[in-house]
Image (cartoon, rainbow, N blue to C red):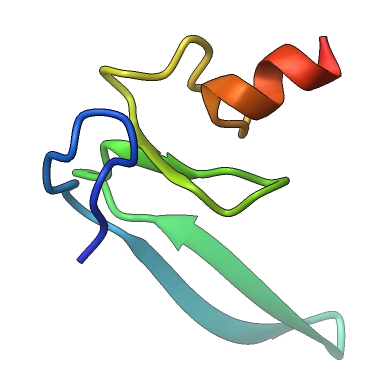
Length: 69
């Protein structure tokens, strides 16, 4: 269970990981569940819900987003 580091609310959904072969090459796929409402920051690994995120498509928490912009 993930908790938003900004508001403290419990986040929903998660990630599914599966593997398959495409043209004989093993591939690992990480996909989100349809109900996922959070990101895990690509830089610091903090969890942030979409409601608190300044840019949910960036993959960063708000603190790291400010650093990279």
